[in-house]
Image (cartoon, rainbow, N blue to C red; front, side, top):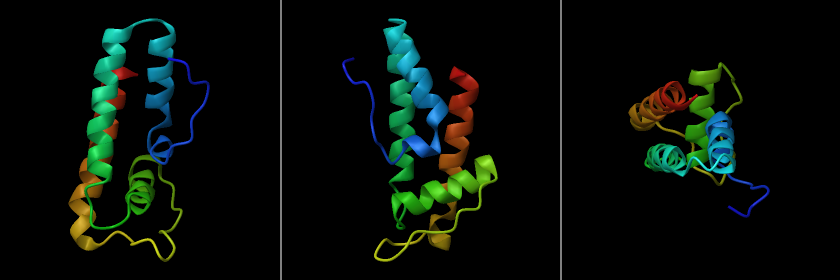
Length: 103
């Protein structure tokens, strides 16, 4: 819709979904693009709902969904806590479910 590129912290957690969204827009399948965008928005809402920093949550999601062990965030960012574990699991599940639905 005018942009050629973007830099976003949430892109790394679900790059395939953003690439699919871009393709849907290019193909002018705006109804499906809207549905995918709403699903992405729900995932972002979940990623940002933990006590720990969003980037810490993303790193944990990548460990669950992709098998990547990339450590935690550095100070001054707040790492993921045990209380955040349900949020991490839910975000990882939402990403998997959305990939199954749209990819």
